[in-house]
Image 1 (spheres, rainbow, N blue to C red):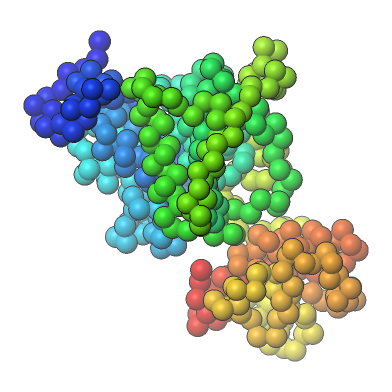
Image 2: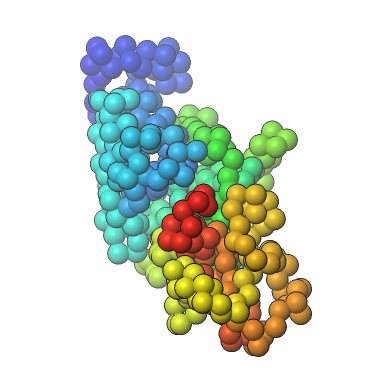
Length: 384
C-alpha cells in the first residue's frame, strides 16, 4: 500500500500527475521509495537534487568530507556559505529547502566494508556517486549481496559513463571490470580535472535511471553502458553481458562477503594526507624551504603537465611530466639530491616509485605538492 498525497503534494507534483506513465499511483511509488546516494560531490549533487524534487520519500546521503571552495565549480548542491561545513549537512539542508516533504538521512562517515551493509540494507536502490575504485567495487558487491540495483556513473574531464548494474536481471560492475586498473593508471578528477557541467549531465542521467526503476517504466540501462562525450555531444551505447564466471554474481561466486577493497584495488578508497609516501621519502614544504635557503644543492623536478605552469611554478624547477619521466631518466643524476613535486603530491609519489625502482635513492617527494608550498612557504602562489 503506497502512501497518500496531501493536497499540497498534489499541487507540487502536478506536472508528474499529468503524465500517464507516472500519474497519482507513480507519484505515490516515489513517495514510498528510498534511495541511498553514495557521495555528495559532483555526481551526488544533481542526483540528490532531482530525486528530492521528484518526490522520492526517503533519501540517504553518505559522505565524510567538508565543503571546499574548489568543490563549488561542479558540486552545485553546496554554496559559498557552506564552505567548511560537513557535506552531508550542507546537502541535507539544501534538499529539505527544495522539498520539505521528504526525509533525508545522513551518514557522516566513509562508506566501508565495516558499515556498508548496515547503511545500505534499508534502501531500495543505490546510486554510485563516488570517484574511486575501492568504493565502486564495494558498492557493486553490496548491491549484489543485497539484491539491489546499482545506478552507476563516472566522469573525467569531458567524458562520462552511466549504467544500471542489477545482478538479478543482468551484469554487475565486476562483469564489466573483473579487475581494477593498475594503481595510478587512471587519474582522479582532482588530478586530471573535470568540466564543471559534466557531473550535471551524468548525474541527471543517473537520477533519471533511478526514477525509471522506482516507477517501473521505460527501459533502464541494464546490460548497457552509456558513453558520453561533451566535446562532440555524442552518446554511444555498449552492450554488456553477464560474466558466467563473475566472482560475485555468478551461480558459484568466490566473493560471498565484503572484502578489503583498498587491498584489492591497491589504492586508498578515502582521502588520506595528499601525497604522503612515508618511509622517510617525504619532505615537508617548510623543511625543503629551509634546506634551499641554506644553499643545499637540490634538484627540483616538477612532474605536472605543461599547462599547469601557468597556474603556479617553483623557481628553478625542471618540468618533466609524469608520463615522460620513464623515457627521460637519463636526464637525472642519481648522485644528486632530487625532490619531486606536483599539485598535491599524488603524481610525484608515483614518480618517486618509478625512480626508486630505477635505483635512485637520494630522492624525496614534496608532501602536499606545490599547494603545500603555497600554504606553508609562499602565500603569493595560488592554491588550485
